[in-house]
Image 1 (cartoon, rainbow, N blue to C red):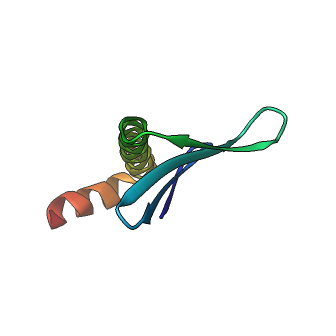
Image 2: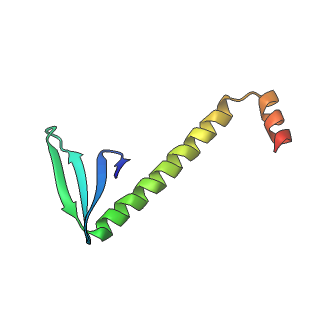
Length: 80
């Protein structure tokens, strides 16, 4: 399972009873690094990804409303 967050890729692997967590990223010299991390760091980065995604979606929704005309906005409010 890979989850994309900004410039990082989070990975979780399971082998039998053992779970391993990794973060991959490209540094300033364009070299790919993959590091094993613990569950606490993985969980923190995963939560950060969710917060970032929600803020991005919220911003996109607000931009959509800016593009709507007054007529379209009134139609939306009547539908809800």
